[in-house]
Length: 336
Image (tube, rainbow, N blue to C red; front, side, top):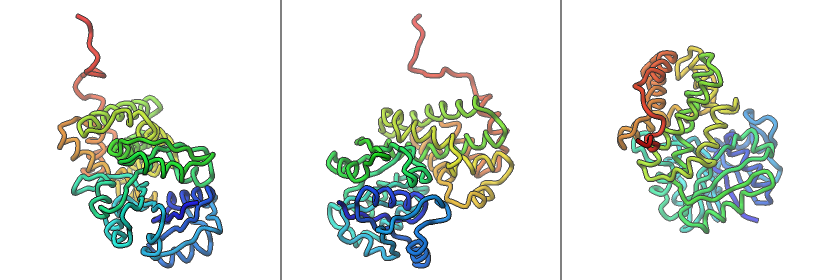
């Protein structure tokens, strides 16, 4: 049995606390708000996961130091924009070699750093791992079979996390490519926004399949340029997470995209969804990374134009369709 804390009492944090408790671990979940912590401790559920009950053995606190001290493993489950500030706040309470598992997905807007890089800058004494894959909280919390991948710098850390999370409903693979896992988790949210916009415009399955496939091609170009492994892109943190996020109504990115396609602004859509829409934050960072590394990412470019420049979604789609003619894969050539 491990002593585990989950920092973040949103949907995914609660779902993982339920999973880890059912796995037999001693679990503490931490909310930033004393009032929300008290309510969660009393009611044992949150409005966004009405079918998921927090087991009685799970302790709820708002005390960050208490949640960090003497834990075998700490799960970081905030919105991605709070990763650096959370890491900075918890650093004094983290011991050398303590294992931290990041489950947030995103890229820091100003520095263009991945989330694990931010954590390592703020908590250099820790062993940092990342957990990602097609894992909507609504299903993880209910024990619906789910598969994910954990990345870490060492096999020992990855296998430790694997052993703590594995269950008959939550299968975990290991992968040394932290960069690829995190890029996949961040960029798929932007493609999911595009897929949702297409749904909102009333387009069909052909369009969504095209966006998923060409989105994979864009992600592959950036993966290669940034030194990530394309094998990771073709795994759970890449295509697995991309497909589920583009197709599921559990996906807040897809839901926000649908609203934008139907005529809402980005801010109106985010307010309507009433949860953090990570793809909005990842879109601008993805575009800047593409420019920095000299790769073309036209879907992400057009999503940014819709989100931040007020371009009509139908016009953005038209521009994607009328781009210059090109081959599907430059590595494939005719024998002449």
